[in-house]
Image (cartoon, rainbow, N blue to C red; front, side, top):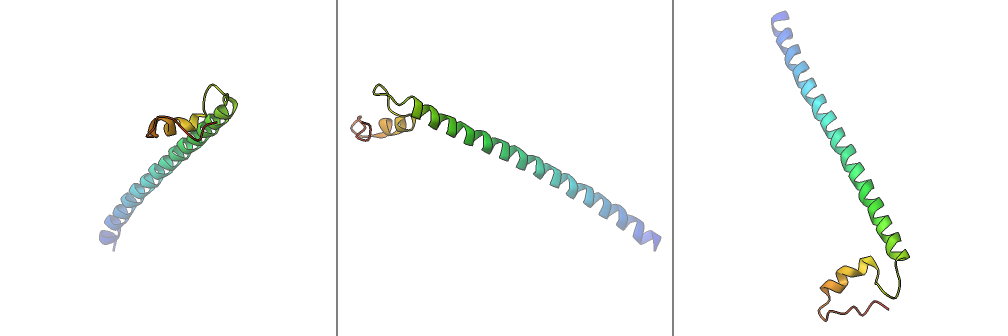
Amino acid sequence: MVVIGLPLAFILWARWDKWRDALQHARGRLKRMLTVGILVALLIIVLGWLSWQWRAPVAPAIWLLPLLVLSPSGSCAAST
């Protein structure tokens, strides 16, 4: 019984360590993804706020700049 049980215990222990390391690695990746997501959301909020504050007759909103670049006629009809 010891001859069969001891190697089996070592194999299961090694697999458990490998599985636990994989879980810790996944947890680290999840934390990093959440951090990056929160930072990107804050950047979008700040850019939106800045474009709202910067909205003057001189310049369009920041989010309209891609429309200005991609519009075929070169002028944006949405800006007032």
